[in-house]
Image 1 (cartoon, rainbow, N blue to C red):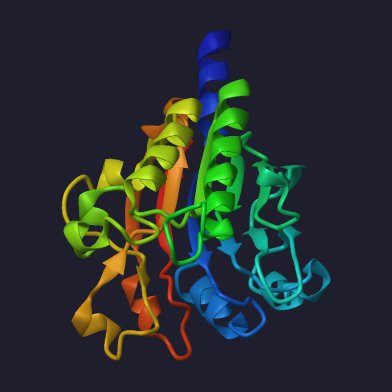
Image 2: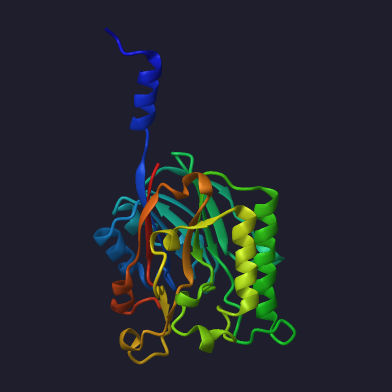
Length: 279
């Protein structure tokens, strides 16, 4: 006796489900740290790797080395010496967007849709300079304007089946920084920045996947180069994020920060952040 058609359809749908691991990492020069990217690809093997601050024109990204490790697909936006974002993937994908929010003419965003229909947005939000006052610091104003336009974009086009990752340059929660009290007036943790980031989250109905998995406790992804012993001092901030839309956020698990990468030879000052999605 043959199984009913609806059962066959359900089984086929289950077979098409894809479990994939995604990582986001501000690499602080993809060409200078090509070896570290290859190390991560070899030892951790995420299916999708989103890089920020590539500091390279797209044509000079060492894509052949990454292809040799199975990352045959790339979408990217680049600039010489600063900014730059790239999505490297083992999974086929198609570029769908690259926004220049705040009209900065910076390579800070690229998005691609994977073959399973999930769209990945990779962002590098402006750092904002040193003074949290747009009247005296143009860069801080640019950061707030960038976030405002991100908010407006996602409010106008509510995303579905999407993941947003990147160096968002804001540590929003009190336990996302080593000292909430001491950093309240430091760029990346000021109330106005947190408010702007919260507005972006609410506009797109984004879920903070990392904190969904790790709801309590101090958690960092960045440690300053200025610290003589970053590991012992442990004055970190969680600047790197993985968000998902509500329709797929419950499929996420296994979130973690690869703190050890901050201690690799000639490291980035950021550590990679991971999450796995069963879709």
